[in-house]
Image 1 (spheres, rainbow over the protein chains, first blue to last red):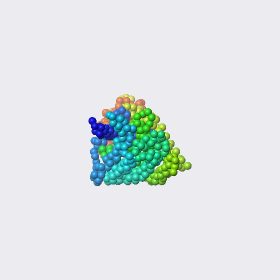
Image 2: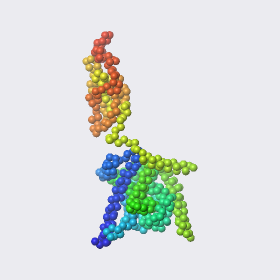
Image 3: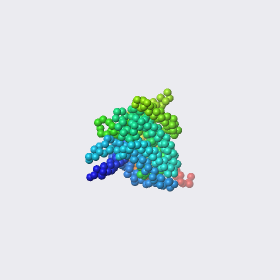
Image 4: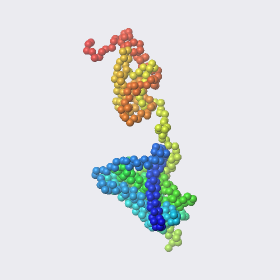
Amino acid sequence: MSPALLSALLTTAHVAVLLGAVLTAAAYLVWFERKLLARMQLRLGPNRAGWAGLLQPLADVIKLLCKEDVIPAAADRTVYRLAPALTALSAILAFAVIPLGEPVQLFGLEHQLVISDLSVGALFLLGLSSLSVYGVTLGGFASSSKYALLGALRALAQMISYELPLGLSLAPVFLLAGSLSLSDIVRAQADFPFAVLCPVSFVLFVIGALAEARRTPFDLPEAESELVAGYHTEYSGMRFGLYFVGEYLNMLVLGSMGTVFFWGGWLGPGLPGPLWFALKVGLFCFVFVWVRATLPRLRYDQLMRLNWRWLLPLALINLVLTAAGAWLLRGGV
Amino acid sequence: MKLWRSIRGTLDAFWITLRTLFRRPATIAWPEKRRAPAERFRARIVLTRDPQGKERCVACYLCSAACPVSCISMQSAEAPDGRRYAAWFRINFARCIFCGLCAEACPTRAIQMTPDYEMCRRDPLSLLYEKEDLLIDGPGKDPHYDFYRHAGIGVAAPRGTLPGERPPEDPGSLLP
């Protein structure tokens, strides 16, 4: 077999395995969240389907697939159908650039543990997170329902606003790493993870990530108590499932971003790289759930004030100070 | 200072949720584990019998009048010895709210609440309990209470036959 064919086959297998692993991880993230949230509220959580409710995600998927797919009469049918796919797609695509470890030798070929090591991988990730706004907003607009519309409006404003501190919190990392390639950023953290070097950036990133993932305390777009289910109120069946999976994939993406940018990706003693990576992402997910169990939802004006009056100036000051610090450390002038 | 208090208040909450994570859940996993309800728990309604093993119910309609959701219905009848009883007695448990007002209204301690709360059915008609479903063999709470021993009727002699008594009026008759 020629090396080119083998390499193509390996990449195809890699994509298939990664897709399966990521979707399974997202499904079990739902289980993980329900279980953890339940224990933090002194409940048991899902425990009927399989041992400790481990088959619950599977049962949920089967249920969603069997449900009727309702499209409101006044909905914009094309957009309504496409929007959930857009959300899930933008989350899945992000895994193409996230490096899971050092290159490995497979069948005499060097195989990268990342599908495409883009030189602007970080920009690609930020671009995709902007794109996921479309899935949410278009879904909400196309439903022609007041709750969905309000949810979409909130999501639009929130996600565009919080992209600024999210992007700015990453800028110091790019400065210190001197590259936008995710693999290079990870390798630049061989001595210290960037969370230690720029803790302010890290805190800003976590807050921005919570807002980008539309999770408590920033879950205004779907606020159950006010908007039924927000932008996906009218969705049912697997279309709702796609939104749901997209949301949890988004959590994984943001966890992976945090791992790559701030906690040194696959780097770690003892264990193999991908395992370290998974552990760190799991820790991020734990923090996301922990925050959900703890904090109440912000009010809309509080959300905007927090962003524009606190996070954004803080991110700008942080960027300037980090740049100055890096400049001085490298000898100035 | 206000900012400091806000930050501390936020972080404290995180400590509380983390601590709670390691506590035992308060949930009781029914049906594997069942909790014994309190003695005076108000659930399935029964009709009890007096110490002699006869029906306590005198079909006075007080329970059905007290019932806020009108789920109790009956037809009264009278035995030859003057003792009243319910010809049929029906409780619609699909409607019952287990408020216990019927048991409170009952002058003869016939209708009583029991702690048996597991009575969910798929078919609402199977929740229609007739007299034979409701009657139990024992006296339930207050085991020595016997209404007819106090009232005398049906125990000493049929109604209107004791010295100084007149036979009962027939309210349907027009004769003086």
